[in-house]
Image (cartoon, chains in turn blue, red, yellow, purple):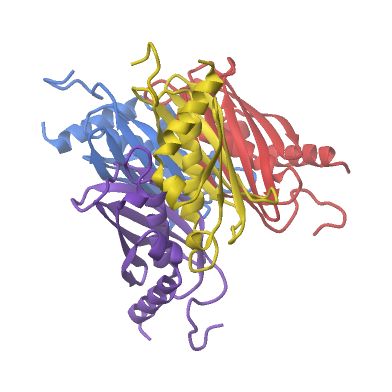
Length: 146
Length: 146
Length: 146
Length: 146
């Protein structure tokens, strides 16, 4: 199985059971490739806080989900070991947020991934950086792998 | 109006319109006092990710909401200028998460607030630190204040 | 050996060989107790950047050293797994910076420590939060410990 | 004056008076271009902590200095509004650390800059992200600018 095919299957497997991202937040999985993932979420009334803008926590959630897909894309179970986020501009109802996550470095068990959340005008809404740690196991069963 | 009364009213005013925290996430506002806020959220199926644990983004959201109440509690409109979070243990369906936010320092326009998310056994689930910046305006109209 | 005595000896052992903190930066170790450490550094001309204030990196360094003493104070070798810092006010030549580090939570291998850097007027200059991970070994040989 | 020339002069002006970076730490300024800076530092005995590796605070300091050059390179006085760092591998005596800082986004007063510290083998030692805020003034006097 090619790395591309493996990543695609990781994405399908994880997304199918991710109630929080899919059902509660309304995210879509646009791509899961080796070291890369893209998710999209339209800002709807359910996402709005008292200032009538998207709750920062939900922008974090979009980026954190994207991080999970990107860092698990090699079919090694990988967890977050730390993260940071910078918020750059607000998102309003009707905005369509796209988050692209990219592997910056992966060495042994530890990797760094950068997630960028942009709106439909291509403006950067937030930047999230995650540090990952690979643990035992695979996302889906793979021949010759425990 | 005493600082306590002012903070209580800030809490009520903000919470009433915070769809994201109240309706989508199911948070309750337990306390809003000068420089302090407490929110609670039970982990329900809607919060679960593919690992069947509470999505880290929703733990962040709980802490971020608590931060907003704590840093606005003096009835000066205050926004987040930065934040960081450390996740310490997972939360499962049925867990009741309580987040207490406390002002650590406030000098001029800038403050630091620490939020601690604990479960029903008193175990620390996450620690969130927020840096705040006060801008113009009040949360609710106050005599003699613009 | 009591926890207090153990921590004191950890402090002496580590500080004796810490050229960077002691000789290059001019720090003093004021206390190393179980889950707590205090270091002090006077801001001297060597610490100043082009704005004639203490380089933020050296304030970070003071806090990071304090973190190392606090999290190793139980005589289990412990390393930093992540950190964040917020700078609150500048430090000038002649200022005496004291950093107190306190264990906030320690559960299994992972802990959270908060470091607060204050000047001689008790004003908070920076707040640093560190996440620690205990690995194998002891700082100084202890009977019955590998 | 071209943006390139302006950035070069910002670099010279700032570096000339930066005792901390130049004299205390031994950094060299390799490049200061619009939205980009490169600094280098050899790890010497003065940088070593008790584990005989470069103090993490000095790696932070290298990245923080690079951040300052990159975000001031447009000759608008710009300060750090927040930062985070991830340490990926240790640096030893004799290692030559090069830090490249790149502007990721700049919109109005706020920008995001990514600094990557690598050793002489091209291995990533640390990644630092800085959020900047432009304030009043110029680094060197510029015609038609206050």
